[in-house]
Length: 266
Image (tube, rainbow, N blue to C red; front, side, top):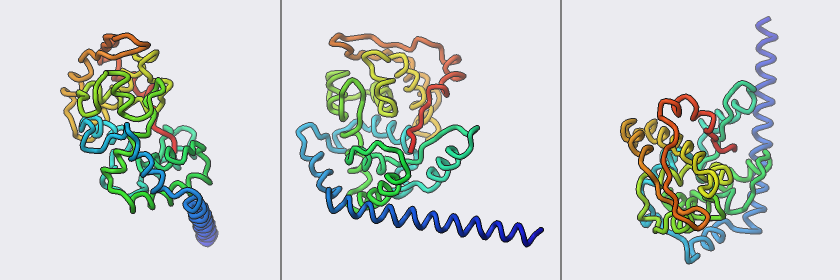
């Protein structure tokens, strides 16, 4: 029996190694072809040359912190790929009873958005990983984070943090307060579901997810999160200023907010 088990284990490891090697080879080959056609550095330079590009030091620290906490909590401690998150994502996809989660880092999401490749198939994923490593060899973590918030969709056809700040709050990205920043940070995971013009209540629920992520990452206390959540938010929707408040008590939100938690799929 032990020999049979050992044989099966060897077969499994061999098959996994072969599949992993094929995944890496195809990803490297595809990434090289993509890089020759459209260098990732040229795409980054194009974004950074835009009039509405906002550099890292001109973006609200609250927005940057909230974004990292909800999108990629270990952003500054891993490389282009977060192996732990990737393994967790694979397991979540294989087990039907597991909560689905994504394994993409912020760097990978930048690559995906730069190339406008929203296909979540395995072939693109392998290419994305190699391009993510290339991106981190070209730019610092701060620069990549700035790229992310400048190209991501914040709903209501606002692409990038400058458009979102001016469209929703008539302010510059550096002027966001913490309640505005934590509200905005949750929108990119599903812009059409959280855009403020017609889904403010859903965006507020998502804000609670963001605040909870900040608490888990020890950026704020639970008391601070609760207080921030209760603050009214003045925003523009459909051309008019609106007064947004939390419509549901925190005790209710604590038991229902997980239904609104959407972790970006890989």
